[in-house]
Image (cartoon, rainbow, N blue to C red):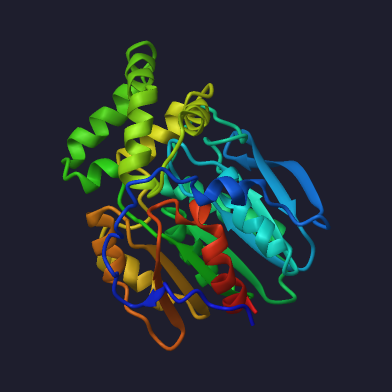
Length: 325
């Protein structure tokens, strides 16, 4: 069994870690470059019919072995790329990791649709039934808001025996800020509108805005201008504003309350590993601290923030491999 880093603690958050005054290369930089030499990578665009639309869903499978479906967070700057550092490490330990881009994000179709929880629940049900075998044990790794969707999907699929929830969240950014539902809905409508919506979205995905958001909420180590520019390019892809507007305004929240999220956890009949970052923003950290460990549910706190799986894959992967094994 892999050695468990001593820094990770079970249960309550140890609080925000002290930063060094010296500039250090962030750990995600090394992780992104690392890849097992024997890994096999395949890429596909899977067509999914939703009502009258045919939507292309981008997928990538790394490695061979036990199947693991890996779901990135719902975020203006999120794509399957954030899961790749973990996937490469898991592939080296005998797992076939299938990564996806959610419709509306990344390399998947970004049509002008009304993105909603019902849409993404149906999408994940389609993907799980297509990509995960029903004749053996399989697992799902889900980051951020994807955690709630993974819980709902796994509750109806007993062959999904294990869930790994990475910095799980259930409230969109504007809801976390306390903005009223009517205002959030108005902002969502405005961003979707031609002309003015494009201008507002362009302003809110300015390099400085993206960088500030990444530093305050997403990463806990030094990030470069090149990294910010890469994330800005993700946010500014054609059609990216529609799903992003839904997420930011709380339109993709999988549940409405903290108790509802905990009820979803209790409903899942398998084993769950919940990994949380000690640099997580206060409101989200409070939600994570409310999740208590049980005989079938392990809660571990480690370094990192909302993108801990991207930034600290080397630290987290031994725990995930031990849990999945």
